[in-house]
Length: 172
Image (cartoon, rainbow, N blue to C red; front, top):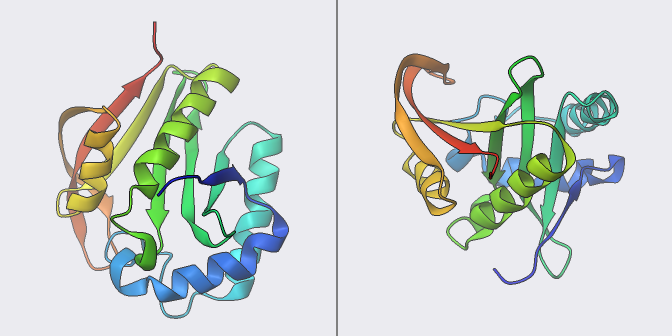
């Protein structure tokens, strides 16, 4: 993937996000419960509206990813911000048709740079289910440090799962 546009979500992205999510249920749903067959356009609209409010308050920064033709490819963002400890979760998802094309690492680098430039966060955590090898590869490609396995850390749609913790820290 050459040139991506990565920007904060806008209300008019809901239809594109919904379409990409529906296309990607079989690949994304095992790891992210929100991406299911009943995911609606209204769900996407409400999520984007909530993210806009969280961004205004400095509590989350969620970005939409587009290719050179303006096709929606997925999302990447910072959430679960803990201001006291200056740490946040960094998460991502890519639509099925764009998986394996280098989109996620490019987006993660962009979002991490944004976080360390625009916020006072010192640490970004990428938490991947042990079976989610695609997500683990993304973390490794961007140079995130693997810190270990967290037992029963994630609630997947069908079960609890151990997770691998990766971190990116503010450059010194």
